[in-house]
Length: 212
Image (cartoon, rainbow, N blue to C red; front, top):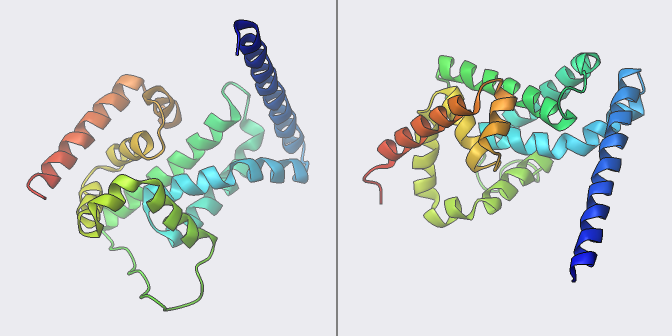
């Protein structure tokens, strides 16, 4: 592709993004005015991203199901307060991370054990949430290659982090978000996020030291 062709492609891509942004803003305004189909379309656009985030952070399909519902309930209740000062994507992810962070803090306080996974062949066929757990495992081949036993050590090490440290680590390494974006979602600075990530990484290395 020559320079002119590349330029035309970039211009079309930029124009398409602009149209999509305008379309989403229109949907948000319609939903704010009480248009239920518009709100349902916004949910459809982000439901899988929100579910994946919840699954990555809490690693349990039942907890993820509850958090997923709570997140979109908060989105619905607070939609009138959205002022277009950031992207709708950032706003909805900010709500999602706050809900998940609250959940991790409650769990950290109670020190409750997660419910045991059903035995093979037990219960009904896996639903959408269970399938997402399987997809998450496949999407993280490094964990899969390290083996199930090491995976248990990694999960235990993650449980040893503070809720905020774990949130930052998961958002960075499993969601692939930039530090600045994580800071925007958590309502803090990029430098604070960087420090949290450093502490989380140091703790994980110490917890996993000596494991082969």
